[in-house]
Length: 282
Image (tube, rainbow, N blue to C red; front, side):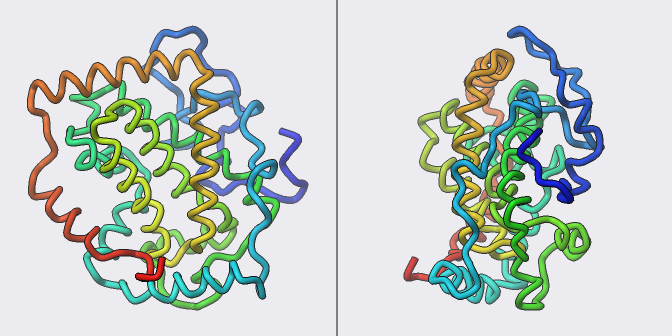
């Protein structure tokens, strides 16, 4: 991929096995036996060499003395005040992109229990697009290599076990935010009657990165830009479209069968989201 800059590398989460991700199954059939490009990370739908060049549409990261950085610091200071609150706990949960845990992050907003057992095509769709959407952020990440908030303010992050890896991984744009917003866009297309709740959850999923003290506000905003571009590219892929159609049928069937997420879980999520991650002025 010529866009990668010499001397820069993808984080361990995506590095191993990237070459094996370059050849995917063809045609419009849904393949459930998909190889991993790294333990727990499935090969995406898009050939890695044909991935997006995010440097083409993501502007340069804010400079130290810019007004954008001033805004980022203001938002960060507010988010730091949520440490150890229910919102902090939800942000910690949102940080986990492993499956099956990550599938449940949008179950309440969708109103359907997303699981490999009940919605296998949707579950597969979410798992595979982690690579497609997450990798799309890396052109700009490698170009800017922006330090993360915890490296600047020396305050705790909600996933200290990830600190070493995060220090070597550029902050801008946010890959987590891109993945969350991309999932929200895909799910809103599948269930337009739940679009408001799903897009709200996609927004708060990204804002959890502010609460975790691992991303700046502008990282999250540009992550959404990456997601929109990646999802648009995915729609040109036949297998993605076939899986999308199957996932839509699963959602409709799950609604008829009353396969809803646990009410208690959704109540806890809603209470956490009542505390905004952004200052009132925003």
